[in-house]
Length: 261
Image (cartoon, rainbow, N blue to C red; front, side, top):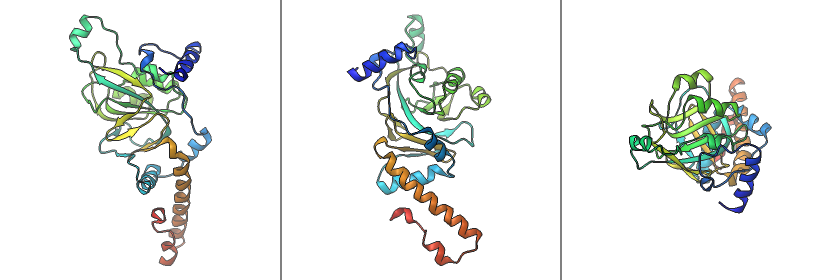
């Protein structure tokens, strides 16, 4: 743990925000820069936001999108925008029965990172695509919701689907299961780089998720991407107006595929 993280850890400890199940050496970062909440809310009002972001990332040569073919919304119709907080899990080598028999500590604990987040964040979890056991369930996701997280995205499975729908919390996952992650997987790093399906995600990246898929904007080009996004949305608004006005083709051509220029 570097000195900056050590300092932040002590600060959060004093504020009662350290759960303590995961060894502190596994926390790579605690504080991240964030956009103003007003800007986030503005982005959420854009229609088909993920598709527009995907076009911009393509133009910039950035692989940052995952179709919902691979990681699906548990509750269709949700859209979230926020900064990523990340957790990486790996399988435990000991068998589940032996781990229970030995009374091993449970290092699978998303609550450690929940209390490090700020309202509006999105938790991104990587379990190398393991869809057998759960990364999170009803109670822990209810805690996430209570703390103000916008949603949970996992390259793996979740359980307690009935509860997730009951509390109406946005979740994207590549699988669903009844099997707990306890003594199956353990968190090996909090707020380090992870792999979500086949793209890299860093803590602080700006994430957009809707029914079509997930788009991840790298933290170092958020401002640049959002500036282009505003222009695309403006052009789309003009196109909608032209459709309503039954405008001639010559007017439409002025705004056709301007994002690729």
